[in-house]
Length: 95
Image 1 (cartoon, rainbow, N blue to C red):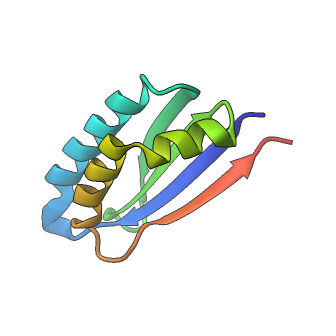
Image 2: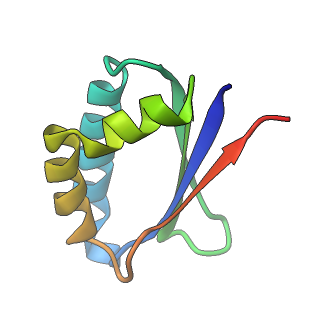
């Protein structure tokens, strides 16, 4: 069953260029992960330093496998260092 992963991130303003680069790097690697369907990055109109990443995966197991990969965790750690607060992640399933 396909799922959607929503990750909300609030960045420090001067970190925006670095975040954009890391998100592109992360997505390019995710595209080769088993079960990846699609992804998109949205930026809030109300707060331009708030980002929402939406990833679609074939299954929760596929997402968990990708989430646990060392390379992903390393890039995620770099992203975490650019944020004002910890990212908020939620997983949704299609009905």
